[in-house]
Amino acid sequence: MAIAGDITIANLVTQALKQAGRTTPSTAQITDATNFQFRRVKSDIASYSGRHEVLLKQAVTATVDGVQKYAWPTDAHYMKSVVLLDGPDEWRGTATAGATTSITLAASLDVSDANQLRGRWLATTGGTGASQITQIVGWDNGTKVATVEPDFITATASGTTYLIANDHTKLWHRDKATEWDTLQVPSLRGRALRGSMSGRNLWLEYTPDKIYVLWWDYWAYLDRLDDAGSVVLGHIREYYSLWSQGLTAWLCQRYDEDRYETEMAVYKALLDSYASEAAQVTSTQFFDV
Image (cartoon, one colour):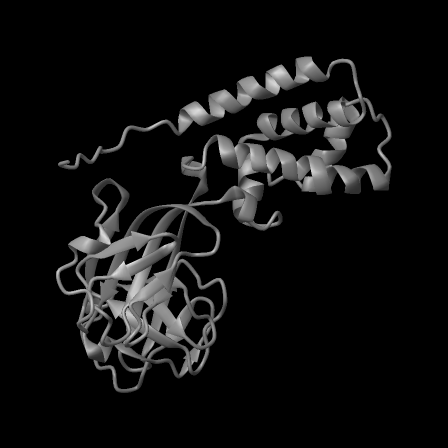
């Protein structure tokens, strides 16, 4: 039996309206419930547990020579870790062609042993298809074509710049956070070995002297994600009962149904159960006073 696909938000809202007593929901009711009650459930779930494993995402940012501060990905709620990717200068370059499954690297790149590149992470740092990361699974030194897995979401092209990484440095981790005032030389140029968070920004230990790649690992803020995106639809599929019950409860309130309090009590219990899945113990910092 095939795995069930993602349910549409329209179907979810329509079914919840029926459960809330609207046996034949109108288009206006579906639109109203999507704009208000659906958003309310989305906000409830985000506030109950912002560090649930189903919300984990990754993103990459190319550094800029001379720029030390880097903003979090816009949909990040909590940061888990940040890794800096580096590689030899000859592994930085500009593609001469691209696709979703491969990228043709610079003609000057000469790596006769395919095993030197196979398995390396490749991040796109500019041009068409920028800010993506994938892994090289095949290399042809004659054609300069690198086959990648997973595929690029946005196809690369001639002019896409890239970095092939052979060195990973963990700059920051939420369990071992670095404070800005502990960085020894926070204004010199070079390759950073540490970073510090201030608000929704990462400050690097050194100001970059070339293009590196920051690989963010974070919990996405559910309320900032695209409703039609894979994270939201996947979340609805995995926690359908939670979403359905939340919509039903708020819609019962909206239409003054007598069973509002009963439905809300069930919804709160499901929220508590969901939040308990993400409960975790982290390190505690102590300071001399």
